[in-house]
Length: 443
Image: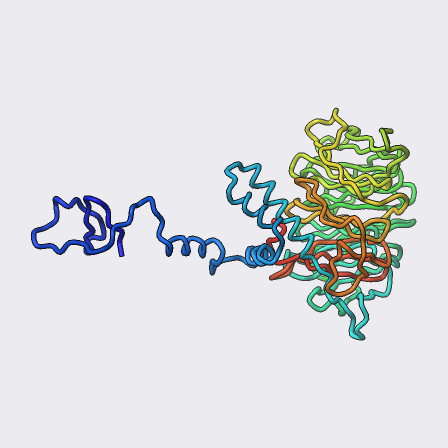
């Protein structure tokens, strides 16, 4: 029934209010009890509450978050209430990040990933040295690089079935993909780089580098049709993946890591702790130094080889070193060496290869430690998702942020499917699958 307003009457045919003075003669008066317009009726309050918490159109991630909030402690409710009541965009974003971190910290579980004989975790048969998604997001296929040089393909929906694709002969050090092009690099002498396209099944382009040109390739990146590999004494840049012309970038130290800020700006992380930026539009110019991670500071000393680089948020650089540094630096203020964020707790001292990945939304970073633990932080607030002390053994259903693994995690990759988002990890010869939540939980 429409609400009765003082001095007005409701016309059911025209579906609108009119002044009482214009009521036609003989029309029956409204018999509805008058309720002031500023007073909410009980059924209206119930209806509004139902719209907030019980919408039929909720996405899986929203429904998952609501269930965690309902079953969680008061901390979730306080964060959720602050998020709803805040009118400031920055405050709302901070509350949302905090709530996502709390949900991931308590809701992530180790999946029961076993082989046909029921052994947990899944044993690949050789050291897992690299992981990368294959094809479009949600396809469920991933590349697996082995310590003996074999490149495998695996359907994550049937993880016990793997196919050997190509043998490079030495340990695979990196797998990178940009659109339909995949780049695979291998260590040793001579070093090799393998390129394949998703549209051309069975067609491979293999490049073998002479030792005096580029040896011991440790990293590789592909963007559009450009391919860059880094190794002993510098890097090689192929401006077109199918052509032999290349630009050699000679450096005084070995290149351990690479990343792109955009199609033209490349960052090189080196053994001596120096990070340089190279503009590929000016191939004849030398790179400029951005950060020197080996610069001695209070509580930090010694050489800090740069193992991982990731450009995030359009203006920042995530850096991980063998010394145990895990920091975010602002690329807009290169003269200031003070990081925007410094993540405490990461353990690394001598292991050259430890896994690290960021999720596609650039909100969280996951890192494997030398102490065989998985840790994670928010890239927006610096909040840690892991516990300080690990008191669980790795088992199906266990919280991975509270568990000790048998070996350090060497590589990891975020792999979503049609319904859920997973974190795949390679530890020694084993594959682990961590269920983070439904799709959209990280965004």
